[in-house]
Length: 263
Image 1 (spheres, rainbow, N blue to C red):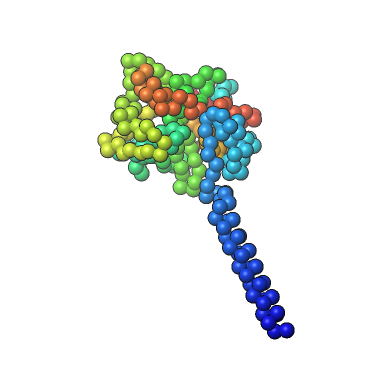
Image 2 (cartoon, rainbow, N blue to C red):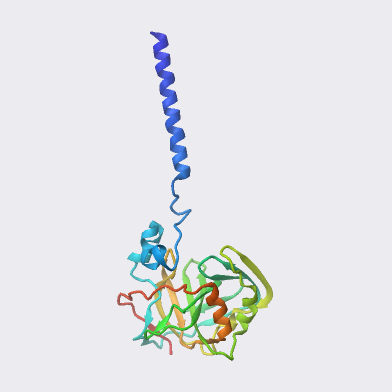
């Protein structure tokens, strides 16, 4: 009776080992929510209409109530809003083509103060056409400057860019010769570039609470859309448009959000 018992015990160990191996294999091949997210784009079956269904991490893209961009209209003048303090410094820039846009990462040291909160400039990126509409009208391009406070709050300064054939932008003139042209490629611009060159002379703004305009569409972002657009040359916006013919998210439902203006 001893040998049958030993055989049964051995068979049981083999079965358990096989189950553990299968479980380990499954865990390695299964999608890892949070560490890997689904690919997305600006068109087709992975375009903005479907972002919220592509990955649970993107749920806010379709279910959020404070999504961006929105149409700027009916803004309320608020005398309590103070001008944004811009403290940008020159430095080298690291450009990356992430397949969706060109992201320019900056050296630490540049920041803004808005509403009494200091936000460090992290990076800026471009869209064609611009994502911010004013009374339904979009501009040729925009640049969005992402900032983050010490406690993790995000602030986005959006500057609308309009074509002026004879008036190229100096910052774009410094960056454009170094644009990485393939997804995943990057290039360092060693020249000293000041992001302040992406700001108009008058930095009056509209503000509202919104989100990131690309997956995961994180909400709670304080938006500052500058009222005065900035000029770019026809050549400059066409160079970007050749790389990204359309990388713009459509306008989102404001859901009754209040838009305020500081002037």
